[in-house]
Image (cartoon, rainbow, N blue to C red; front, side):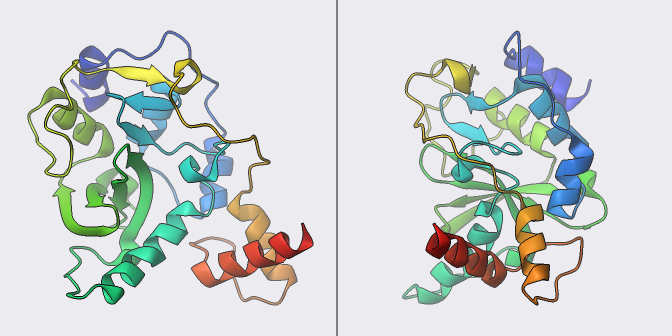
Length: 228
């Protein structure tokens, strides 16, 4: 039994979901390949929340706060080290910030990351959970789908998650059906392709694939903010 099969048995997906994105385009935009189980999760469940708590980032999401292809993953990667260095007693990081790619968030502001090593083997990436960019950290030595099965079945207790997370069982609520999901005004999804094109047109030495440094994202945001 695959982890996804176990998850759908544990937590039934909605009867209909939005069409799956063009993964080739998404991976080209990100400059990296994505785990197959994540693609299957998106295709099976679509946007929404597990147990009214866990939200997975989606490609081209209307809000940058949940957009896998937007600037948030790079922002968070930089902020982790900034928060740690400004703490009164800096803590040790279990993973290099450069190896962390944010792909989910919880209702308490905890972040879910892939540990992107080996870089060319995304199906081997494990999951790290962080409490609001601070200590503590929890690392799950398995895939995202396996992490969700372990968490929603109660076989693994994530220290920073509520103890009553499964008080109403393992559930999934599609985003389009949730009345209490925070909403933002629709925006034009900005992919890293647009940022990459802008950077190359403005003299930055940026390869076609790979992560975009946060300073380039910030420069792009500043120029577009000024032009708006």
